[in-house]
Image (cartoon, rainbow, N blue to C red; front, side):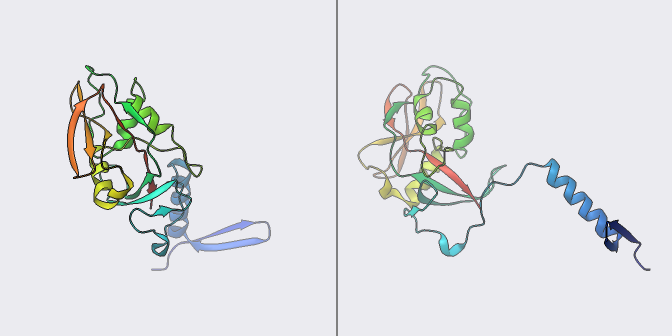
Length: 199
């Protein structure tokens, strides 16, 4: 059976195509207008990916390694800021926060920005190479940094994560031995921002 053909004319141009193909084009066009655009990134060439811990030109920091997709977060590279942004309190000791994800520091940080959380605010205030989407990493993201680029971090101090443990405590990372513990939110700990580079 021959497919149903449709002829489209515009000025001097005539296009003849199967109705099924035109329907697919029309649906694709509608989705392109209705759905949000994909992450505003260029495709990553495997030959242009720096070694773990090396500076990633134009990305605001160092290559912290590939993070597999999880939940509604697509696969991405973790970019580690070139420097700490000081020592700060986690904030709001005695108050429960919804920033409890062990993996999604971005979501935690968005939640923390609604209150008085100095560590998260210091992380989001960091900019580099024109990127202003840095955040305070979650506990698992800090561990990811320890696995892939531990030498970027001081070994004689502790780094806050964005992951709350309880109303009074939040998780931190000690990069000398790779241990994670929790500490009072009123204590000042180091802050190292990260951002995501989607692939």
